Amino acid sequence: MTPVGDLWVYLSTNPLLHLTLTLVAYLAGDRLYRRFGLNPLLNPVVIAIVLLVGLLVATGTSYERYFEGAQFVHFLLGPATVALAIPLYNQFDRVRKSAGPLLAAVLVGSLSASLSAVGIATLMGAAPEIVASIAPKSVTTPIAMGIAERLGGLPSLTAVLVILTGILGAMLGPPLLNLLRIRDWRARGLAIGVAAHGIGTARAMQVNEVAGAFSGLAMGLNALATAILLPLLWSWLF
Image 1 (cartoon, helix red, strand yellow):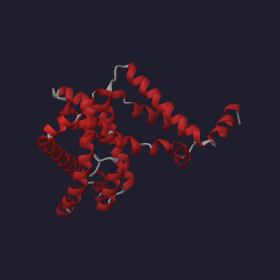
Image 2 (cartoon, rainbow, N blue to C red):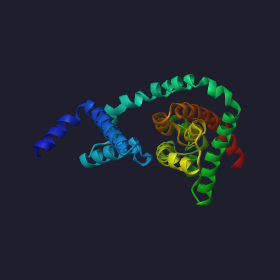
Image 3 (cartoon, helix red, strand yellow):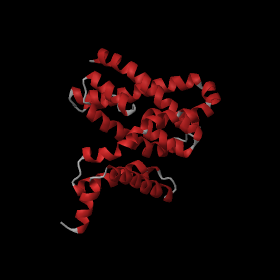
Image 4 (spheres, rainbow, N blue to C red):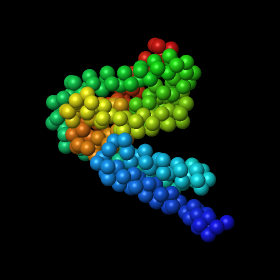
């Protein structure tokens, strides 16, 4: 084994290595993202995933070994989600004044996100468990996995689909909203939050505080609406 190989074997036994690699990969993605003027196609999460997957494959490192060190980042997802309440509190007056349209938009967005996914998958001849797995794709991962399991889907597949949905929403959502000439930050935040959950909300927060606040609210309300309505619609449709 080469000296580099010996060094990697030694370092890979330290859980802090994979935590460090995760942070370095994200910082590299964020630097590239800012270097090109916050281009949504260069989402830092996408770049970090590509770098980490490439490294794990090249070194033959299992996901379980990687997660031993990176689980601290996973733990911080909870506090980070709760912290979304801070910009929401700062924008409380705007949220209160827009309560009616906001709730209507979230309800329509939640139904359209689920029903369009179910309709497309069904028309393409997907198996019932695949259809059930893709139905809650626009909901944040833990809730989406619970919904999929209740519908008879595959939670692990749902987790992958949710992450892909968030990445695509964060990358393609802003250019699409620009193309549609939607300038109101409240509307932009709602659209991103409903369609792209946490990853989209993180993107919205980087661009504008109002958009981030409305996106975080939309993400939470969409999860609640989907968890209540989707099982009811599922039992009626199937």
